[in-house]
Amino acid sequence: MEKQKYAISIQNLTKRYGKYRGVSDLSLNVEAGDIFGFLGPNGAGKSTTIRSLLGLIKFQKGNAQILGMDVKSRQKDILKEIGYMPSEAMFYPTMRVKDVIRLAADMRGVDCGKEADMLCERLNVDRNKKIEELSLGNRKKVSIVCAMQHKPKLFIFDEPTSGLDPLMQAEFFQLIMEYNAQGATCFLSSHVLSEIKKYCRHAAIIKEGKLLCVDTVENLTKTSTKRIRMTKDGVEEDFVYKGDLNELFAGFAGHNIEDIVIEEPELDEIFMHYYKED
Image 1 (cartoon, helix red, strand yellow):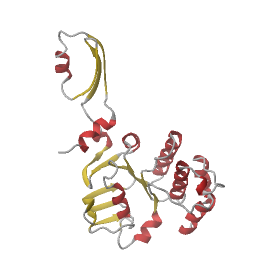
Image 2: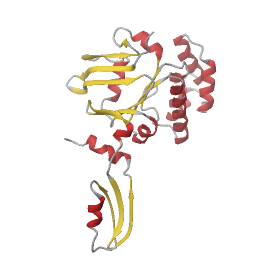
Image 3: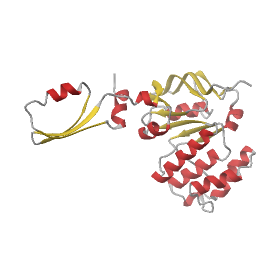
Image 4: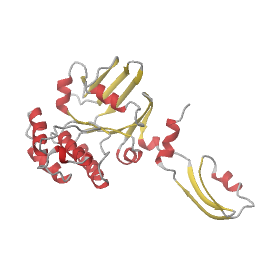
C-alpha cells in the first residue's frame, strides 16, 4: 500500500456563521510525520478549521481529507485514527478520572491500560479524584491522556498547553516528540509563538479567517531585524532596527555611547508584521 503523503489536506475551506466570519477559502497540506504549527491570535479561525475537519461543524464550501479519507463521507473512520484535544476539556463532573480515561478507551474498543498508566505517571495525574475537584490544568492533563492513550496516527491539539504549568508543558511536548518519532503526525494550534518555534518544523499563519503564509518555522522566523538597547548621551534607548547596522553606527558619530546591546528581537516582534494591516 502506498504511503499517504499528507496527513491533512484542505482545499478552499470556507465556513461562515451567518454574517460573521469563520474561515475563508483556506487551503493547506500537512505532510505525514510532521509536527505542524497552526498559528494565529485568538479569533483567527484556528478552532473553526479544526472543528470543520473533525465534522463537529459543517462548512459551506471546499473539501478536506484526513489520512487520505474524505472528512464528510468517512468521519467515523477518521475519528478512529486521531487523537483530538479541544481547547476546553469538558467531562462529566462527578466521574472519577480513572473512569473517564477508561470510558474514552472503551468508546474506541481498544485496551489502552498500559499506555494510560504510562501517561498518567508522566503527567502526574491523580486518577482517583473526581473531575469537579480538578483545576483547569489537571483537567487538561486528563484530556491529554484521553487523546494519546490509543496511540493514534494523527494528533490534533487546539491550544493544548493553556492552563499547564511550565513543567507539564515541557513533559507534554516531550511526549509529542516521542510519539512523532514512532511515526505519528501532530497538528498543533497555538497562539504561543515560542512553542511553535521550539517544537514545530512547519507552520501556517492565519489571520481573520484567511491563511497568510505556510513555510518552515526556520524561514518564518528568519529576520535581519535587531533589537537595540543602548545608553546614548546619558539617555537609555530601546528600539527595533531594520536596516544596515553600518548606517546605524555611522549615525552615532559625535555621540557618547556608554553602553550598547544588540540582540535578536522577541519572537512576537518577528511575527508582528504578519498580523499588521496591509
